[in-house]
Image 1 (cartoon, rainbow, N blue to C red):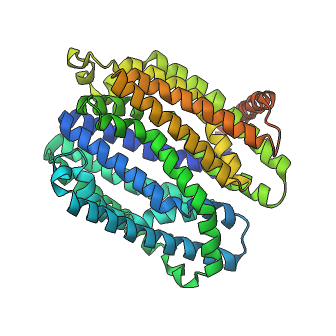
Image 2: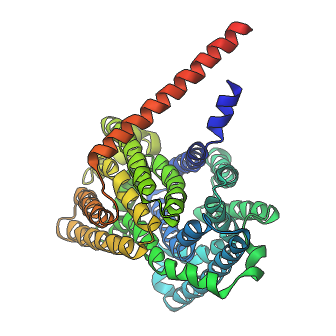
Image 3: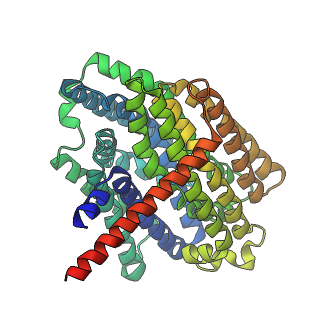
Length: 460
């Protein structure tokens, strides 16, 4: 029994899922504490700080991340060191350039920024960018090496420490939002220090950087960077557009809470795609297209079944979820113009569509078609922005903002499926069949563990 249990907890999907559960659970609870403690304007500033930071980090890490994961999966020892060194060098240069741009914008538009909801981002993100560089770099290197246990350690340290700090603040400290950001920076410094001491960040290999490996990563990255930025904008464009619309800070806070609730659905999605991408990339590099097709059907089927269950649960208990994260303050008549429960329910339908949409993107990158994936994201982003602008400026409706999310996701699935079908046949029947088989095998493994446990107890 112990051998079976150890085999399960060491399995890639389990470790990846555990890592994402840790960071999502801590993030969810921390978000809930902030929603309850901060007044609405301060909370909206925090949301915009995090959203802006996420977008910029997609830019500075997206340049090489997917390329590193793809090419490292089949590289020799010497090539691996060169690739990791190139990744570290490019991410460092990108960080320096981005910080210079942010500081310059803050200096030129100081008066306007100081009066906006983005003041936290332009003030503190340049510091955070350097502080979190080593541990973020370590995450992509470890993902490329498929060392998910170490990823779990990093995420536990970073998310756990900050959540502990937020608990202390909620119970005793009651710090201002500026001090909360300072606490976030200190936690990131600790996480980065651990990664530097463990040599997980790859910066010691910068001297092994070669022009050829850097060029290879950048050639792939010129498309994957846009894809990652576009994907991030698909998540955050709604909040950004709402923040500059006539709807105000209350709408930003309400919509961000609805989005946070639906992020629970994305925990297994991030986990499974993190393991699917290197596997599909390796199969593609070795010319095993049938294996790429099989992996696509397995992951798409398993995730779709899971998301149907999760979405149904969230849809039914939408109001209870809102109460859990923010209390009843956002359900009060003061916000009757925006029905947060309806927002949550619309976005749970979006959750059902996510697995196949995300897997088509992973599939395109794994077969070295990042340009097509970038085109897919561009069309989705354009559709989303147009829909959001119509929703907030013409109808002043948050519900229509959420509905535009459903529209662009359906478009993305259609585009991704069309181009993947030119490489291998996507079959809905195969997705259903492999999804059934995945959970059937999971059930068999669970029965084996239970039987082994019963036998073990009977011998005691």
